[in-house]
Length: 175
Image 1 (cartoon, one colour):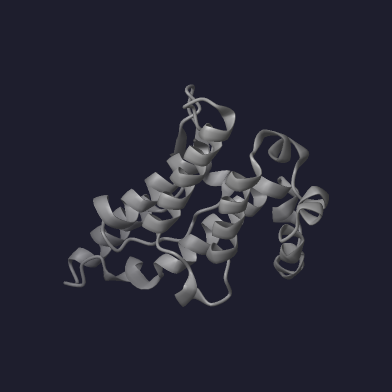
Image 2: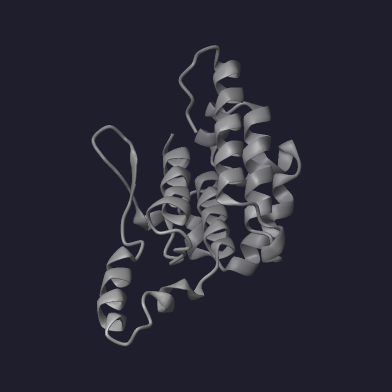
């Protein structure tokens, strides 16, 4: 539910509150949990928008300065959060190039056993895990034009949660 909540929050920021706002400050340390274990984003940069808007208002430029980033960069960052979910917090300490090289380990069941956190392996069905790993691969693609939209990210996470709920025999998704 944490990953779905995070994806919903980012999707809302991209399409709802300030359409076109991509500040690219999405990282695991900026995802907080409330007392109900619901994901909350912090330090996404909304204060920068307000400050820039106030500064630029007199110049007639509006809020253009914060629109320079692209949505695909947030998708990449979310993919990296998915990677950290699989391999643990050590992912952020390793070099990005090394992590991308290790991506081939996710292809096979034996490879997953060597890299994916045992808790994740024990609590996830093979099918649900495969869906999220495939999504992660798409999100961290070096070619930003092939990355999915946040709407697609959210849909795939919700689908993986349904698959997991079916495998668990209940209706309380864990993703």
